Amino acid sequence: MKTKAITLENDIVKLTPLSLENCEYLCSIAEQPKLVQYSPSAIETPVDLENYVKIALKQQEAETSIPFIIYDKRISSYAGSTRFMNINWKIKY
Figure 1 (cartoon, rainbow, N blue to C red):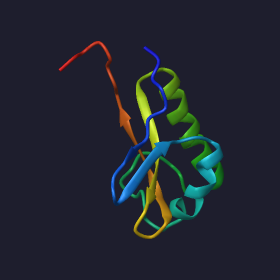
Figure 2 (cartoon, rainbow, N blue to C red):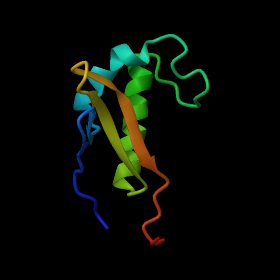
Figure 3 (cartoon, one colour):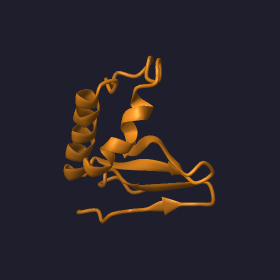
Figure 4 (cartoon, rainbow, N blue to C red):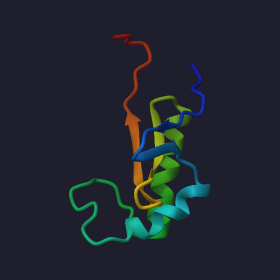
């Protein structure tokens, strides 16, 4: 099953597909001190962040993840990234 590009949006945020091209919008966010102190993902440097995005995109290719970049409409700025993870398409609820 191949997923198509999905955009999720309401009055506050817009989630669009994450890509290497929009990775640059996350650099200033990822540099914030202690942002991911409890996360196993290293994103503090541009190289680490790019690797994080590449892993998310590989998971998307494997159809186990759908990654997004988050745009906060209230402040007209990018706010981070998120994703649906560990997707198992065989289980239907």
